[in-house]
Amino acid sequence: FYSLLFREKKRRKIEELTEKMAVDGGHGDSGDWDGRWNHVKKFLERPGPFTHPDFEPSIESLGFLLETCKILAIGAGGLGCELLKNLALSGFRHIHVVDMDTIDISNLNRQFLFRTKDVGRPKADVAADFVNNRIPGCKVVPYPLQLTCRIPEYSIIARRWMNGMLISLLSYKDGVLDPSSIIPLIDGGTEGFKGNARVILPGMTACIDCTLALYPPQINFPMCTIASMPRLPEHCVEYVRMLQWPKDEPFGEGVGLDGDNPEHIQWVFQRAHERAADYSITGVTYRLTQGEEPHTVTTSACSTEVFKMASSAYIPLNNYLVFNDVDGLYTYTFEAERKENCPACSQVPQDLQFPPSAKLQEVLEYLTENASLQMKSPAITATLEGKNKTLYLQTVASIEERTRPNLCKTLKELGLSDGQELAVADITTPQTVLFKLKLTS
Image (cartoon, rainbow, N blue to C red; front, side, top):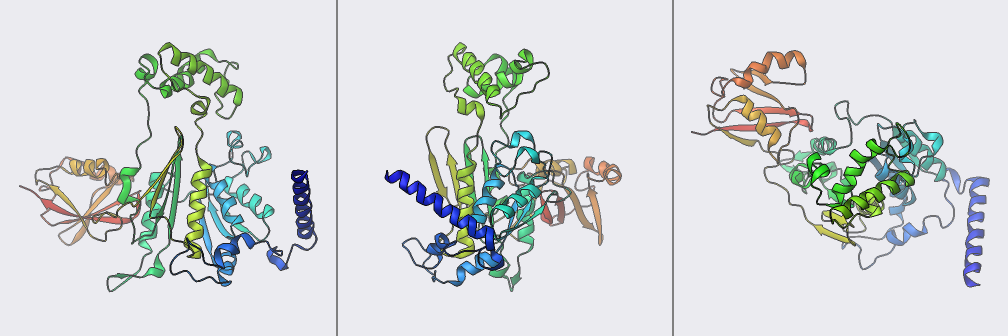
């Protein structure tokens, strides 16, 4: 009886609010109504055991969130949809979202801002329209384009580029960082059943490049292991996905595997379970077959950190949170340390140690293979005889052809000396990275 009564009262309350919004849009153009932001005011207008030691409760804090604070969200996919919803319902009204992708039918089961009629449309446009229409007063501005013309997707390369851009916006006076020039970066990501969230204060805390080792490469299982010597439940699932599905064509000729189709996933699960039994392998589950990702947990952590940073009401994450629900639930927070010689944020030239007999090709390989650098297509320039000289550049065909012979020359033959500064440009950063050449005997 009490449960029915509660549900009825809740239904009437929703109807009253909906009618009020439909009739006059609430109070003024903002679409607010009495009590709309009470849940946010509880955090901003009173102290608590977890508030920041320097926090001063104020009725003006809510106004800052509603009218002044601006948020840029990169991506409107699985994480982005959750994040936009969380931010809009937390009082952030001025949100900008960037996404170059368009909506595919396979997105609809987890990217809940999209509908069947939206397939083929830009994700940024549809996500912005949905939030703006659903949440009164919210103004999401879409940018259905690439972050830059040089970055094809939101990957580690894009993260590093954004990291470098925020660092380039920092201001220093007499060598002291101006706090007002800091734009916080809240980064989150998922892979399989694992997720992470981190808070980066450019110039103050560990940046993306400080912790490149925390971004491992995508795991690819060797085909010979999948086909002949499976040892893990993942091997069994990949065997069915990559080899058995194309061979059996269980749902008709030319029908590809749809990871969002329950019938397809059930078929893969059953065949993977059978293969696992043949090799005495345990651990093949329906959830593993789905390959679902912990979007909700990760975006909840990210949106919470955005609220902390914008309101200054609570101490922000310090500074890296990892989440794992492969087997049970596990979370861990640690402080990623800033590297003194980080090529992105240290403000000092990096040392390059090579003998004079080393060839430029070896320097190029070091820049791309070193775990702390991981450059993609570095262009190397030096000042020789008072003039800037491009030693190698591979992104422009004509210049690459002209500078290619330099790769076979030694550093001595190129006229480089001990202490020489090399300027290196790369797609991973909007800034030129300076290196100081240390010639060893």
